[in-house]
Image (cartoon, rainbow, N blue to C red; front, side, top):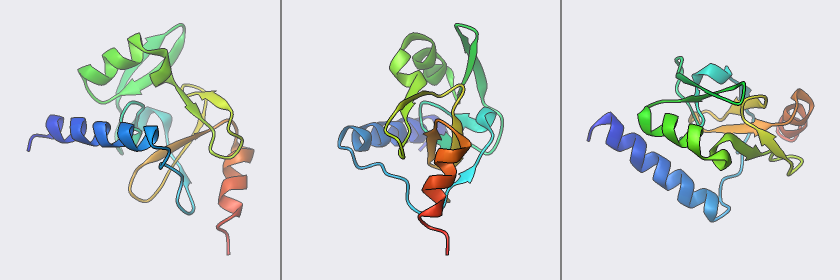
Length: 121
């Protein structure tokens, strides 16, 4: 399976799980660099992604399909903070990842810390 097909399948599965309301952070999350996140696939790709400028803000995608989705679909540029339930702009959010690379967007360092405090020993 090509990398592009694999990313498409991953994106599709992530989207279906999100619709089903099943994507919740699991355990401690580690803050990651915004530029390394594909904001469509919701994954820390561990290397710089393609910047997409929209209304003076920078978003990141891993391929042409993701670039197009970010440029044309405002919903792809927003997320929900899992602690507060508030909508956040992915370009300005604090982004943290699980061990598997799945990312979550927080409105502040404080809400990320609040999430992680639940799992601190």
